[in-house]
Length: 446
Figure (cartoon, rainbow, N blue to C red):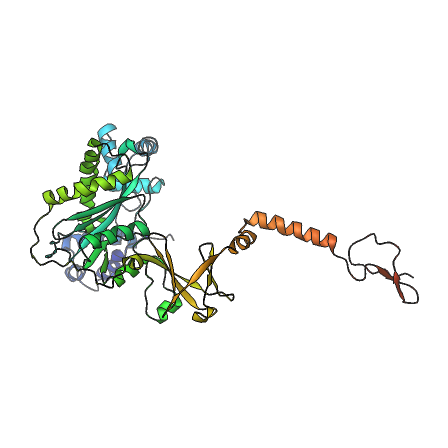
């Protein structure tokens, strides 16, 4: 007896129909239980009586669909997709098949065909992001959007892309900008220091997740125990300035500064072309006259006339506030290594061996060494250079070759205290007449 394929619906329907066949219930009662019409039930009861349980199954089961694509059309579509539409998605490929090859096929059927033939890969469903309009902040200095834009600002007059660090006020669209060779921590510090000198400290800055602004490094165990987050140099300085940092999730979130770059890449480039600017220094000098005119033309009045720019305090030391801070450990000889340089502490009583020292490096390159409570006076010494040459890192292949050479030399040069003696019959030790082998060997003479 063969197997009969049934759906769950047909399996549940069969016992009720069998009761009708066995005259246990009426056809009307069975139709009400199965929620089908009386005429449909009569047809199925008749099929069950003629064919048995197989009469419940759909008659088209196992038969090819009348709408099935012919084998010739299938091969033609596969060939066209491999030859002409190899990198096309299902939607575009379906449009081109109809437009150019007069082959009508639905997008979903084509997608399944491409998946089956390995010409398309499933893509994870992504949530569509909606960018909702946001009202400007009410006061000037309440929120500043900042970013850097790498572009050929001087076109063919300077064969180099460089970066424009730009700041735009969210309330008024007032712009401050300056050119640098790259977007890094020192250009960010220098441009932000000039912004503070010109306007004051803003309440918040809105920036992207560039590695200069937001770290991807996980917090250390010490930071986790003390409840501290792993901060970038930029975040540390903003914390000292009492400026809140907000990180944008998408470029559209800080659309004001993104649109600013679109404008400047058109307008500013042409303005500098007219006056034939050909250097970064010349471009920065040109910004001193360009930005006031630009702001006069494009700024809008704030909804609240009160300014949120905050003046710097009297004790505000710009040189060391805008500095890169790193930690080093005091060595046993009361020296400190920092970026291939060695410094000697002048007064060893001010620091302990193994103590952590914070080193501040200003934008101009000056260094300051401090502990938690005091500043250390140091002097640079030059004994580190031979040490660095001796400990210079080598590749794995070079290290392996040097190690093999060293082992061979050692084996050829080593002599045991027993190389010069041998055993006689009376077990007395005497010098050996010749030593042909340099390996450790004992000769027992009979």
